[in-house]
Length: 235
Image (tube, rainbow, N blue to C red; front, side, top):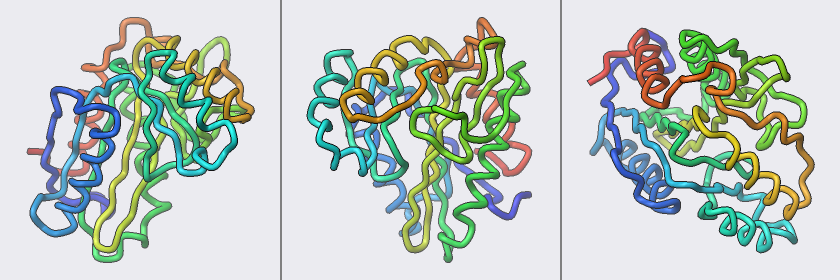
């Protein structure tokens, strides 16, 4: 068992998206429930509706209103998340994994979690044939030291972005895995980042299926649960 993880995790598959804002808020509600001891340590997995999740820093930029409109014009609902950095986009071709568990000193292992989960998701994707690694790609959207990327003939693609929210007594670690249909995500990010005045390289936005044709969200979900199962008892 890994010291960073609860030895037992309840798995909750959310069948339908609640909506862009409601999905984000549900994660925070579950964090409060886990902190209070009303809900056990858990994994929440779901496929979201098309969403651009802006970071708190994005809201202070002069082009934020224009970026929201650009998101809507592409069919993506704009929302503001409480964890993470810059804007990230996702849709039904992605899998979101929210890991929520209590911890008395929740801030103590904050950085270690990024490294552990980066390796866990990279390993899950590698098991499906993706040449995966962990680290920031130059020019990636919502850049992060522990992004998970896949290597292909045209270069590296960002496949997993992670974010964390820590409160006294519990933490929420949220990961977005882009599996299928990268084109709409790339297009909305081009428009929203231009409005925000942020530079990035659109060639870094991709999906796992760009590297392993035929890979599905269901296959990635099974691989992620298998990877978790080597560290904790799932129920």
